[in-house]
Amino acid sequence: MLAGFSRISLAQSDTEKTRAQLQQLQSDIKRINREISSASAHKNTLQQQLRQADIQLGKLKRGMADNQRAMAASTRELSILEKQYAELELARNQQQARIGIELKTAWQMGQQGQVKVLLNQESPHTVARIMGYYRYFFAARNELLGQYRETLRQLEGLKQRIADTLTQLEVQRHTLDKQRINLAKAQTNRELAVANLSANISSKGEQLKQKEQDRKELESLVRAIEEAVVTLQVPDNYQAFKGARGKMPWPLKGKPSNRFGRSRNEGKMRWQGITIPAKEGATVRAIHHGRVVYSDWLRGSGLLLIIDHGDGYMSLYAHNQSLLREVGEWVSAGTPISTVGSSGGQDRAGLYFEIRHQGKPTNPAKWCKG
Image 1 (cartoon, rainbow, N blue to C red):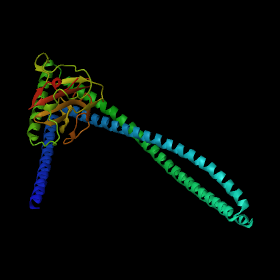
Image 2: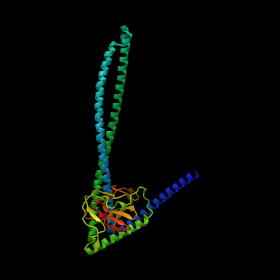
Image 3: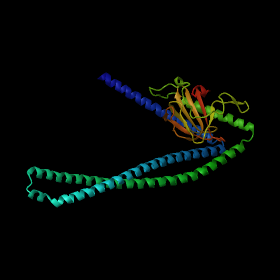
Image 4: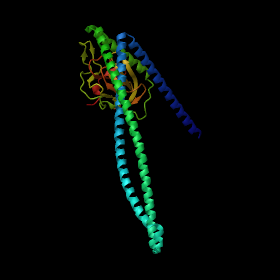
């Protein structure tokens, strides 16, 4: 018994230790988010304006998508309720017809009367049989009336649910109209912010300098996150990232517009990841099991999401329209994590995707199949 209590105590201790480590991890990541976001936002007013415009646009798009899904669910529910109502109306009409027949039969039997049957001096067997018929008809009629009352009650309940669903749909439509108005304003604000930023960075030399600064900022973020996730705990049945090499799905379908390691910006820089052009709003999915360690806006990357997969491996998803996961959430391969956009000042929609090991970029084509 003492040994058993000892094992239980150790298990509880390990659980508390793991919980404390996870809480510390979340605290560290939130601190990094605040520091990086604050530093990028305040480097200049134009970047701050773009950051606010991208974040607002992302939230509105996500809110509209949630509302449209809710409306679709309400519409499906309304269709089901209306079908049930039609079926109950048919059942009510059939029950009414049967009740009419039962009432007519009861009236005809009433003409004979139970007392009259007894006075006819029929044999005891005949009397017993006829009295049994009476009891059967009375019981059947009562059961039919009970079913009819229940049908009416259900019809009334369905009528109220249909009315409530219609009201809910009207509220959702009104909300969607407001969201569309706000979205148009947010898109105008973002276009203005991008135009102002582009005007401020006019020459190729300034563009290259900006991109180099953006890359350094991303490198700084990755290093800070690596320091914070050294104690990241993974489930016992977790498949190592390295073991899934060449078998993982791409974050979304599409043909890359560049190749990893090729030169860019007139040979001054090299591609550390790949860009996959896609329709705005398309779903981006996690390539492997892991924990979200960054979900915020970063200069040069726009709305950025980073997943830590353990053993020093990370996947990065940039220029999103909206982010669907929060810091600290666990995700599996195929889990929706964001939607395709052009945040961060891009002129067309697409996903920028990187895989890193120990902070160094590695070719995604060697890890993802297809």
